Image (tube, rainbow, N blue to C red):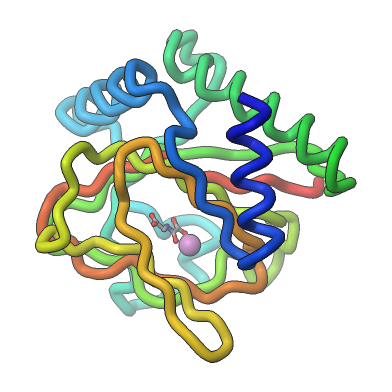
Length: 197
Ligand code: OGA
Ligand code: NI
């Protein structure tokens, strides 16, 4: 686990975007994918971009994903196993990088075929508590033709990251502009933010 954490953190330090493979064991990733599908099939997932984000979005279609927030009060074994890993990661990050993370929030996200998320930063205008973004993908056998890449806008280059199963991406929420390109297949992930308050 620690070795995976260090690989993720080191690539973040070197390239501003941390990428870690096999961040989740396949069994856990499978269970979380099953959860996500069940949540969708039972109409539990809601269109994102309500609440605070709505102020920024107004009437433009900026994002087409549906989401559901993880919470220990659900008493779901795999959800808790996921949050246990995040707890360990936050401890490790705070110890090794003095990041001062105090809390976090994570949601399942599903981009159905034909959806996207336009270029944005992951901070709200009226709240800067989101310090780091973490995305963990749950898609088996993702093909190039499926699209749905995460496109990161660096100062003088762009980076494409395919949403491959078990891959984790980690970057500073207020610094890197990014977008989700049009997906041609249902695209599943858990996305979250490590916060300083
Ligand atoms: C987000 C986001 C990227 C992705 O939810 O803010 O940018 O690859 N997600 O899912
Ligand atoms: Ni984002």
